[in-house]
Length: 395
Image (tube, rainbow, N blue to C red; front, side):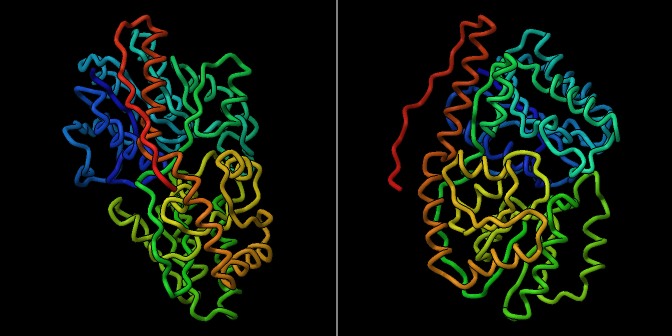
């Protein structure tokens, strides 16, 4: 059986692209497919990622280019696969709303051709705080958000990483499956470093809360002179100068390391050097891979109390140190609660590490294979994928 995957992909590290790589790796090594082809999107030239076996990586499109949709459609038609899986976010095709609308028409066209089509949707923009996200379109932004929902839900099976999204769309007669982001690797409790270090790892945008974090860090450095902060990730497509502006504004802050783009093979060491991982977001666009990666490597987390993050934590039976979103003093206190108590960090990290055993890569792979079989069945396709048995891992 030939599976085609359409996704942003390394060497550029974005949340959705990193997810696409790790799910692809699990699917490619599952033995369920005779052939896997990734129609990959990346703005960065470089070596294709490792550990994908005989998977073909075809960098046939780039974010920000108008030819993304015709390029993907042309390759799908020529490959004539048995299944197509789209790994999508609302802005993966560029910073322009029209570029994204053009790109997000692709699954609908592929489905209309008769191919069994499964789409993973990481963001449901219609349910987000558009003003907090500084969404383009002004008063027409809600109309655009509803249009994106209409486009991105045109698939035989829609997979969502947040249960709240599943409930909302199921009530609207959309055939959905809940697949949490889960662990990207086999979980490992990394030894904690002696030097207190904070980690902020995501794309740089105003709604990610980095400005608030930098203000809190400057205050904490007075009481914790050994404290360090690592900022990892590139600028969000819609805010290309945001990181540079913050580096200029907070250039006086000692012990802040700005790493920029991080290679996939260096991500584990990024978490190894941290004591505490920070999610100080002022608005959310969906699930958080960083939260799951912190659980995978045994790191405590501080997060803002946005309803989306609370739902994610509750659904995943995870623990974090919450603070009131946007409140610098509250963020300082939450970080200090963990800095003062190694036991508190350990209890949180151990709980999350034990919890994430149920969402290992092989379990995520199994859930996708079930979704693929459902798509084949809806298309009255006689082919089916053999689902591997569950292997129980001790926590």
